[in-house]
Image 1 (cartoon, rainbow, N blue to C red):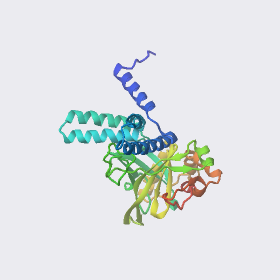
Image 2: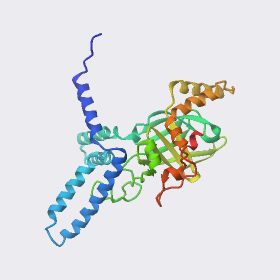
Image 3: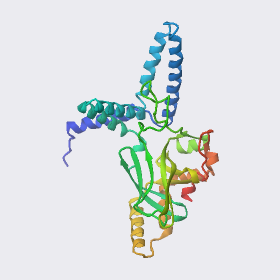
Image 4: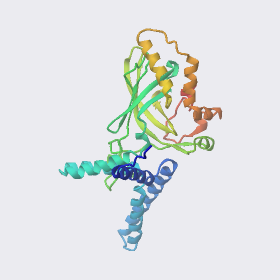
Length: 326
């Protein structure tokens, strides 16, 4: 068989993607980087005060400013925010071509962010309703989880939860991750959840990154619909979504192709009022296979209190970490 030689354009694109992937810091290192950035900002502020009285600290100020710039350039979320803001400002000035270039750079960086890599089908256990399937899509920077299979409360076709992942959205005031001295109305990211040594060894990471969202609930018959505060939490190859006010948390894993077909078939049969004949034990086995790593974590008998060390501003979850899989 003749070897297919990739085009120069494809090679260039692949090299560009590889360069971007290796440029940015993720996971636990990102938490450490942001702490380092916070310390630099504090040092810069202290040095600024000294410069009001003397110029002798000017070199230190310049050195700290350069270190801050270098550190921020390996934070993909910060650079995504910066490029988006630059695009908005260019558009406002009527610089259409420049705005397009900034937007292109923003989208290149966005592709490196794990919270934007969740598109597609996932399965989780919705309490007594059993296992359900959702499809994740993105509308701009908003993650939308739509039910592919549903229940009597929130049926299929309805949105289960959403998460606003736009780092430039206005939520509150931040003094840490703004792109300039004017940090009014900058979004403050949620602090990562810190795991115990036992749990971090299991997952291979110390911190779980999370994002604010909204989860939908309803009474039977899809009445008394309500959107409530929620959080999307990245957990290794999985993720969870927590409905905060009611302490309800669901873990999601990728379904196999066979499990997807089984669940779709069962959902279709229920639409016609037929009793599903699929082997429920077999279906459960497939789902559990998706969650092998989580099952191992549960074998260590780590509840939410044992796995997560809550700081004073952390939200109290009532369900244990593996509640969605039991």
